[in-house]
Image (cartoon, rainbow, N blue to C red; front, side, top):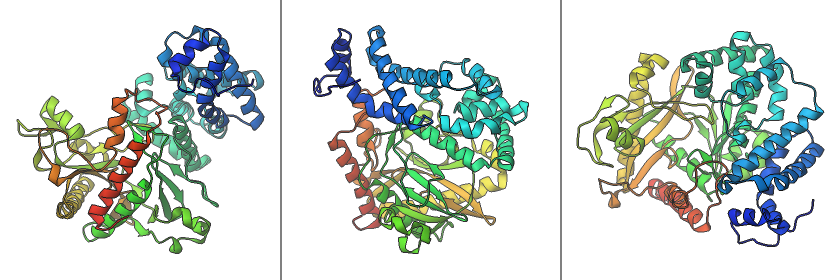
Length: 496
């Protein structure tokens, strides 16, 4: 099929579809050109070999041309296109492959029980090849949870609702499953492939490409490389909004996150130990030296630690989700606040409001301190609260001297050789809410040193907050980059 994509470049999708439905092939050529890259990525990443991808890709666009006349809800074209792609790929392998056995039949049966978005249901063929045999040999009692989690990429909450289990029961079974997989198949590889599959489904840009290593984990912003007893954390310029990674990066964002975390780790090391070893690329292991230019300024070599699966949130002001909860209940995470507070008011005292640490692709959920005690133990909870408050006070004092208000922040902690240490990032615009002190005015939202311009733009254009995300205009990209660099300059006291 040959497309001429030189016409109708200024028309909206709706206008193109209306023309296509009257038989206009040139309009179809433009629409296909507009979505071809997205569909090719999706198909290529889920095909078993190159010639399969090429044939499936062509079949998808033939199917779109043949069926677009039946599309009535034009604004649902993106989801409809994903469904066409999913159905075409699935049909291709159904007609060319043998049945994948009892586990996949179980998967099909369970998948039919809820209505899922077509893109979220699109299967990762590579993942299934690796995991299917492992899951098949699991005890029947936990097999359904494993199928849904590792093959269908469902969240813990979705599994609990569908199988009529408590969320805690699902988490317990997943721990049992990981133990079994670790013993028989190497759970790290299984988890890595699940993470990469979820990343692709969220339209996440490709991870950093190092000469000698592949990432063990790729998040919305950072890529993680396993070096044995150490980890390499690479902060990219990727940016997410409303849990979707955007197609545009923000210049220098990764360097700002790395630079600020490095500054704060050094500034607060007398308050709490952390995992930082060095950011000097020349001191990295030899295996990383071929990529020295790529890693300079946006990477950290850190100690491995056993992560504590709770995010420690400290609030000094009433904003964000805390403000929403206060309006509804007068409290945040079970902690009662005085009546009559306004949005952005300074709180009478610091609040510790923990959340769950969700798997990638899922959402963190607020919990009470008592629930945290049940999860990680009372003694460890007290240590985490104490360390979090001390870190917040130290950073807040420095920020105020730089003309910045630290509204709230979140920490991740781990344990190494029995010692509690701060891990991940710390006091960056991605993990904290910073406000310019000279513009502070309670009773309304405040300007902030983060992705405010991005969120405002996406809200203004009426984006539905579903993948794929729209392209950002250059003005929004440049303003956001400027805000990140400004935060670095004010806090560190020098230009990036």
